[in-house]
Length: 190
Image (cartoon, rainbow, N blue to C red; front, side, top):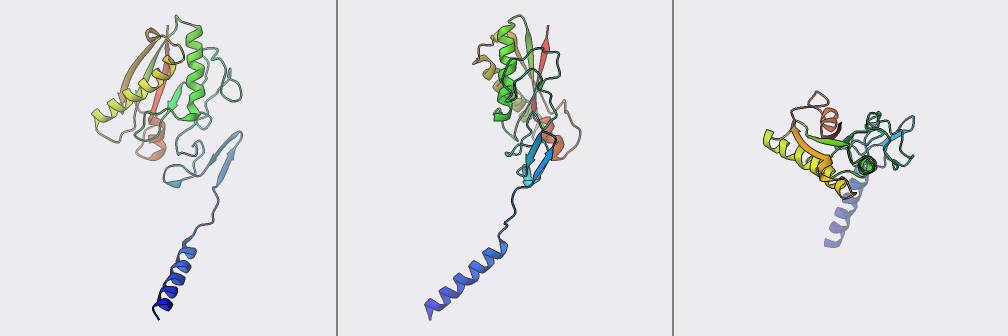
């Protein structure tokens, strides 16, 4: 009798679990050469997001002229419209794989042009205290600076500054705005 109750409970559990399963495949959104799959924050499918939910260089409509198709290659001109913004995940200062080629291209340009200097402007979204956001913006700028230094860029060519949440790229209190505000901007100086 006890075995029958266990078997019945197991069958009911299996039936309930199979009824709740979701066999949907990721939605793929194609916009020209840009492709995003669902997997953004909160599972939302958003063009321009990588699978980890963060923005990628192509998703932001950044022109990467002067770089090879894989994003590698020399950065030819700091005045060109190439990608000069590195985006970050929530509460993270880790440079995402999609942006490593962008950082590498800028580093190659700086190594080849030692008289050129840049300012790395760290930013965050509005969530968190002012102090936390300034510290996070600084960590993001330093992450990009450290990547560049590891490729031979001189300390004297780099300056970091953090604006925290004070200079938003997008106004709004939603995920779309927050994603655009979690960034480091590369500003060339003469």
